[in-house]
Length: 170
Image (cartoon, rainbow, N blue to C red; front, side, top):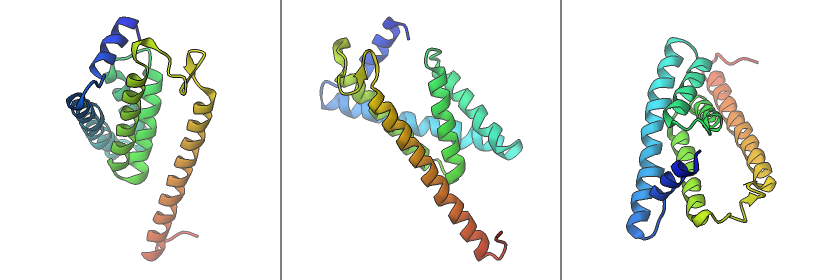
């Protein structure tokens, strides 16, 4: 992102007092997550899933979500996060987990913005101007563990429901 745009966006997320905390938390963590998940995973993705197929539903909603964010510098990251959220909504058949993941992502971004004020690096998070390899490895491991755990849980729940109905596969 160009420095002047990043600076202006960052200023709106700064927390200097209790009122700022309430407003930023409500608008960026709660309201943004609820509105975006309802639109992109709740309406767009489900509509495409119903009329076309699941894969296209996840992909199209992720592309639309990345485009609406209007940040071409981070479009790939936004698309990938949207793809994860789309998969999560499909796998759980609910947007509640995506609301939590989206809100948590926004909360982490706000924490980072507030801990790295005045262009000071955030030493726990950054390494040579980039995300620390420690955090990248931890995030990849956590993502892998989370995806496999969620997938395993919902596969076994689906299999259990199928066998209870007498239509289970072996």
